[in-house]
Length: 616
Image 1 (cartoon, rainbow, N blue to C red):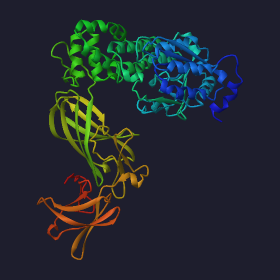
Image 2 (image 1 turned 180 degrees about the vertical axis):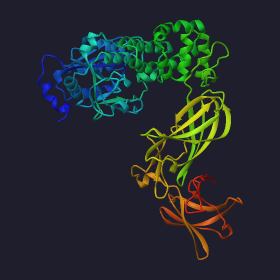
Image 3 (image 1 turned 30 degrees about the vertical axis):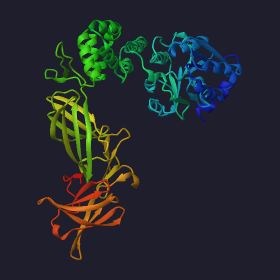
Image 4 (image 1 turned 135 degrees about the horizontal axis):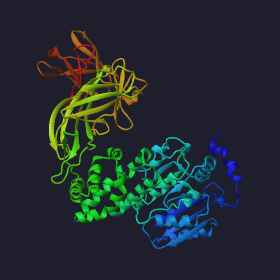
């Protein structure tokens, strides 16, 4: 019997004089969605005399208030509040907290829905574990799949630390909170902003809770994408308001933690996140009229962030955030404006080598440089061409904004378990300048037989600039036409080349598992050449079912001639070589898309260094 199931008796025989949970719902112009949202509440399988619904209308101009009042007339556990429009969910939620009487509070948005057992199960878990916050797995509907937290709900957890469980990664308010914690610590939603008002609230609840729990066995909360595009997060807010909301979150973390790794980890979101302070400062400074305006707008930031801006945090944030925060914190408003205008115009900051450090540094035309930057190696995979036991990989790469090309480049295969590494020198084929800095085209040949340990090997690219070393996983950024089907290498199979769920390139040497035949592609390989009726015939095996024609090529003469193709099975063909090309060295197998796979006919299998492909 699960913890949830064993807890039913505990709740049902508890005190009858106090409500278990208060559901707080801010409402603004949500009339089309209220029937579904409140229908999901009315269908909850928790006893209706054990929870209350507090709906707060935020000055709706449609029929929302009338609908809410009609619901309340038929429900003795529903209360409706109304006041002039505030433009944010913060004030309505705070008003709901002021009148809530449940042992727990749960925040539901007026266009979302709950599964029928959501409230009961969350209350059961909170009672049984003593958790201050209970999270439930979320799903998206109505086009709202993106942005729904999924990674943190990999499994159900009971009574765990909110950092170790990764709960800190989701700061939305759609959770069950123990109301005594909220009231004892006077936790309320931040006023003054349309977006981000919930982040410091949830963070403060985490910081003051003994532990948290997560229900991940199924989806309990459905986030809904509104057809009118009026989800609050899609509307945005001014940069100065965004800055204020971010600083409230930073201050909440600082006040609730001691200096150290835990604090630094929590601060990464408001500082380094995709919409963190670096992004806000770029918007703010690029819109500023003059340096004085920037100094005035960032005065609070310098007071809050300045004392905590340590080396560990600085190393954890992107290059753009490093530059913007360093400039603002040193009071170089003019420099911040210049850098922000480059970044807001999608132009990379010019960075050069600081040979004394060594490292990369932003070198402005005026003012002091910003040194020790987190330059990022950006890799774009152009092609991955398997053949025989190996592959030929081609890619372009560079450090964003770097004014110099790397001196050397290596393809590195790293064993996932042992961490053993095998480097392969990459050939620099071309150097060229772009608006994002200098880039190089490189190629590298890998023979999978060099990967001498069974298991998974992950591909990395390393580049060196006069002692400055950058490294990146490779594969997630790649040409759209690149085939990501798993490829079996060797005959018999000795490795599988595949792309991970995150899109990165890896080898499975062994392989360590079976790969279904309809999900893999086997490179063509010549398995034999013989003379039949005075004609030379080559037998080819692999993924050749879509081959429509074949030609033969002589490397020495550079000549090409057509050959006859005979299908034997879905995985094998016979190629009758023309009499005029008896000294042919390669077969060019042409598929229906016009792609060509070249295989050697010099022996029973192609040399590992001959991996060519092209287009007709």
